[in-house]
Image 1 (cartoon, rainbow over the protein chains, first blue to last red):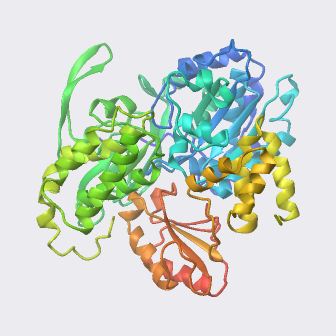
Image 2 (cartoon, one colour):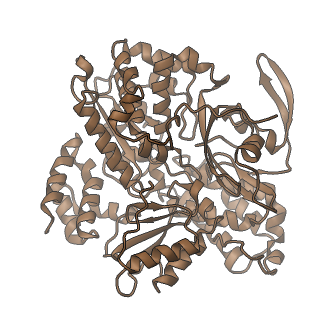
Image 3 (spheres, each protein chain N blue to C red):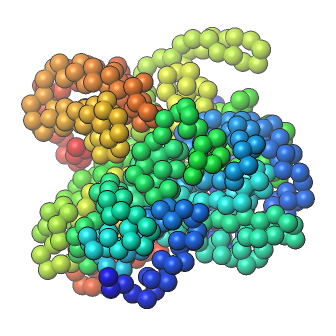
Length: 453
Length: 165
């Protein structure tokens, strides 16, 4: 079956010739009309629209956005904060970069609608330190919007006001974890908080109720307010509504970003048709479907079971190519849609070395608060690094797995899982390659195969 | 502390963004580092004083967050992405090429002071791998040949910006 057409909702203007990131261009293209209408409605109605839309968070966990907003403690009398998670740092993910740099006003409009709906009067955009130009673009865009009475006190002739501030991170991946991000925004080390009791919706920034949403999620809010939750929920597939930006990197002919209705494109269509297939003379070996912490998928393996289609349970028997790119299908086959970062590896890649690369990342980024994660991620890195650069032993795969198995579920935040899943899935699926590595590494590497560790 | 007037005014502007002063610690560290090139112990004490904190509250940030540094770097800061998508497209070769071009090791100031080359984690531009940041500029698809071209420009003191973000 041929791949469906892209459905460019969020990325409609990305890389469009002549489209610039200033207010005038955004307004020429109908910008801020949705906010103008939204502030004439009751805030509760807007929250209902988002609930009806079925929008799920685009940052990684896929938590329903409307539900997140409903959990906010509105009785405490404390101010409610919105924190925009623009700390895009899950390896393989690069969607927010383009929104921030090329269409910042779309994000700001989404923020203002969200703030109005949730009675937020101060919002912070926590942007990763590696986007210095992005931070300047956002600051300029906020200033433009403020001068046009779209941000700030008494917007658009109403009594409602809200300020937005940009806050730059400084290179720490853990700041993408929402409670770590909040600690960082409070001027501390970004040590994630324990939940309960520190659910951001109740005890977030400055111990006040706080909503933390991803950049892409907030852009979707704008479109939901525009077309209505009902109409939005008809885009995509049931429980996986709307569009999704898939970021494809690695060994395909045309890497890049592609926006599709959620669940309407399969992995095979995406990689073979949309991205042009493997590089010349190569075949696909493995793909990580949702950012580097998602469990790896091996080409050639089959996924079987029963799934719900409408009211019925039907059998499925899928290869990697058949998997629909949505939250539920990827979870069902044991991985996740995560942040939408699809990393493709072809048959030139050694899985031992690829895991060594991933382990070095997680070891560098562990905040060090919980012993299993701090020590486990370090030892997994040391073992894979020794396998590549020193002595490799056939039993190292089992040793790696034993370390990984002692991390997940024993830490304050999900980083424990994020650093354990790659090792667990690489060993489960490519265990033979780990066993054979001590012999395989004695062979000289073919020309052009890059070093990974 | 001998900060530029512009830095001082930006510091005073940013502190009231937050209901709690301590939140301004990261912004102040960025501003001071941009002004001075690095964060000295004097700067740590100055920021602590400014925000009503103990120096340890600022020091522990400098030692945690990878972007803050306690010693000066070269005139240009070359950061090569090390993470998976860039590595499988040749990021390690790119990084080695920069080191070779400037006869330097990771994290050191190159002889002559032109650059400091660093290997950093994911820069979030995986679709155009391998990527490199030179100061605030993003450079895409930087293979070894492109690394040589960029190095030549840096050595000649020529601009390297492509305008791409």
